[in-house]
Image 1 (tube, rainbow, N blue to C red):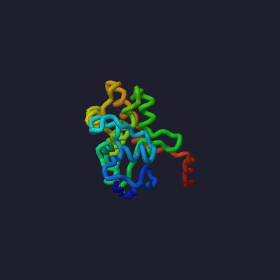
Image 2 (spheres, one colour; image 1 turned 135 degrees about the vertical axis):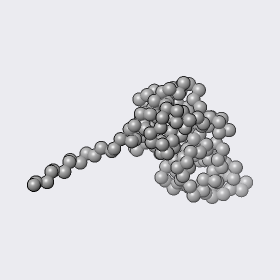
Image 3 (spheres, rainbow, N blue to C red; image 1 turned 45 degrees about the horizontal axis):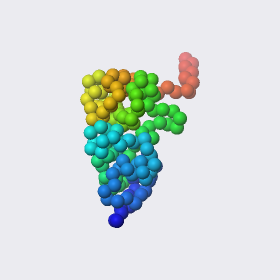
Image 4 (spheres, rainbow, N blue to C red; image 1 turned 90 degrees about the horizontal axis):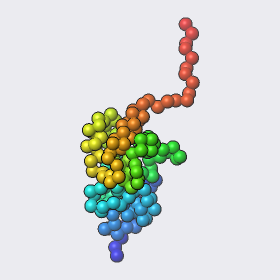
Length: 171
C-alpha cells in the first residue's frame, strides 16, 4: 500500500508519520500519535466529538484526511491545559457540571475554544449557535452554556500579575 510522509504540528510539537492516503485525521491522532482525547462518535461529522482546531479553525477530524493536515497546526484537547493547570474552559466545565458521561466534552471544549476566540463575549444564543454542531446526549445544554459563559468571563478578565506595584514617584 502506498503511504505518504507528512509533517504537522500537534499541540505545539512537530510530529511526523507515514500514512495511507485514506487515513482520517482522527485515526492519526488516536492510533498513531496515541492522543485519545479526540473521540470518535459518528464518523459522519454530525456529533462533533472529534472536533479539533486546524490552524485555529474548528474542524471535524473524522471527515478530514490526515494528508490534508500536512504542514498545518492541530490543537486537541490534550493541548488545552498548561501542565497541571486546566484551561479556563476545562475548569468551567468542571465547575458548572457541564458534562455527565464526558464523551462529548473534548469536542465541545474545542468548539467552545474556537467560538470564544472569535467572540469573547457571546450571548446565550450565540453560544448555543456556536456549539450547534456538537451533540450531547446526556445534558440539556444548560450547564454547558453556563460553563462557556464562565470561561468567557474568566478569559476576558485581565491577567493578574504577582509583581508588586511600582511605588509612587516623589514630588
